[in-house]
Structure formats: structure tokens, C-alpha cells
Amino acid sequence: MCLAIPVRVVEVLPNQRAIIDLSGVRKEISVALLDSVAVGDYVILHVGYALGKLDPEEALQTLALFGELAAFEQNSQQVVA
Image 1 (cartoon, rainbow, N blue to C red):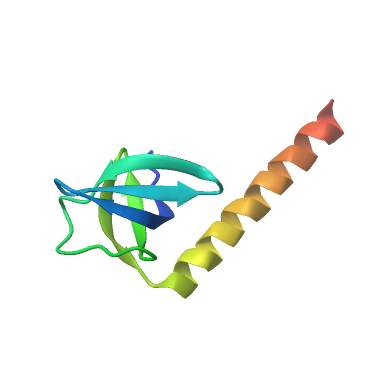
Image 2: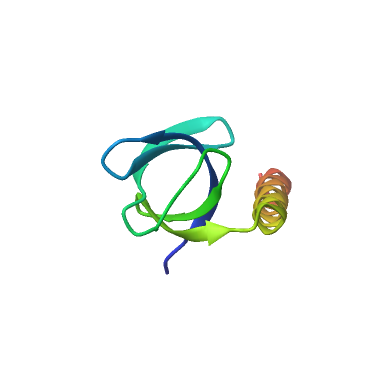
């Protein structure tokens, strides 16, 4: 199964690279597959490559769902333990 996640671009670098932020974690990625990227854009990230741009509202909704899933998994593990 493949997973692509929305991330926010915080810095555009030379050579089709960018720095993204995901919940405080920053990472350098490739944006070579996109026509253009600007600071503040949300992109879909898969194995270090931005695959496409995402509407900010949709990105925030998706990230909120990931947060709910993480909270559910944490609560489920506490009940089992």
C-alpha cells in the first residue's frame, strides 16, 4: 500500500527542491514533478517527491483526519494494554 500525505512548503530551494513542514518536522523534498511551487503551498508528498498541489482547505481537512486516526490508534492501544 502506498501513502501520500499533504505537507506545507516552507522554503523553496534551488534545483527543484523545497523544505516542507509536517507537524513540526521539516524535510527537504523534490518538487521536480511540479510546474511551480511557492512558500505556503500544500503538496502531496510520496517517498520524497511532491506529486501535485492541493487546495489548502482540503489539505487541512486531510491532516485533521490523520490526527483523528492517530488519536484513535493511541486510545485503542491504551485499552488493550
